[in-house]
Length: 522
Image (cartoon, rainbow, N blue to C red; front, side):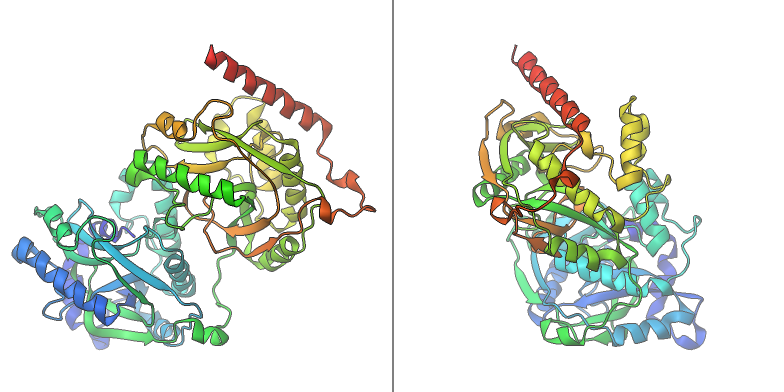
């Protein structure tokens, strides 16, 4: 998580944060800046101290992080914001009684300079799923105790961001009091920092740890979470924790209770699993794309963070309805053989690159997607005008009207006759530039460049990450009752027929697509 930006945005209160070393309840202010964080293992703690000393040898007196003397404690932040002092006792009680019933592994790996005066010891992947899930749980459980965010207090640097990051981080701030959360959460250990504007050889400081992947591995299973008081540069003060819990890990699974404060919605993806052959090819193409895009790549099949898939229905579902949605998917039966014929690469021109099938809208996949949407539509968050994607308004007619109607009926604009199944193997944040034509050529843009065919055998309900990705190993439900072997001879198939006009229009779109391909070749 890029807390460096959040800290810079709050630099005007740096002096009061430094004075928090001597903060006592009898002279408490109306708010306290506190950090819910993960403790390091002894091995990783010792290494962090060593790296901090090496950084200080380079930075000198400008260093604001001090592990060596014991002033500050190396840690991984879960949630850093301002809490109401009056609510701190309730917050302490929450942390003291918090139970996490999963084993969550931390794999610290290499150093990174942010370019803004902060240097991190990063994990092997940018957003480890378990840490992201744990952070979200903590935020949802403690959000009721934060100082109400105001426009005046919002970090000014947010306004200088490009869209959609500016809107995303503004919404994050007003909901949670912290902009760098959710898909922008990037956990790390900060072992070096300087005051805003101070110069230094931060590349050399990053090399104290080593910037190459695998330069400084240190792995452990999270065993303790604490509520810490903060010092300068987002540090945690050593020995100044206000609450803590060591009930963290799979052995405490039976003690986990329902979280009282729960997010009202979840963005979930009902998707088709790939065959092993196509899966392995997608991983290969993802690596090739990353070799071109570099660190801007937001899709990661190679490390196992994300899973290649074909989306059937992606939207926001009501959290209260997720159990019913899980039951629907677990018991879903599809009695037809549905063949997938992945075929060639395509750049969308908007920062996404797809591995497309041989036709733009395979009838069987379109039919399957429609059945899934009709069967789960009652569980979606009610679409609103405020939440409708703004890009829809910029479309030409009749596409603008069609996609607006799709959104208000299903919570997703690109469905029905606009449903174009694919595997996304590369994507970047909005506005980021790159050689996406070259990325498309990793697969090959000519028809038949990258054939991989199989018959659908499994459908799952997956949790989502950045750029519409599906988090690997985080499925909430699944069914393998898919194929003609599961056909019911007495079933009434009329209900699941795709409308004829939609099929005809899809055929027309396929014909146009093929004409474009021929024209391009000529």
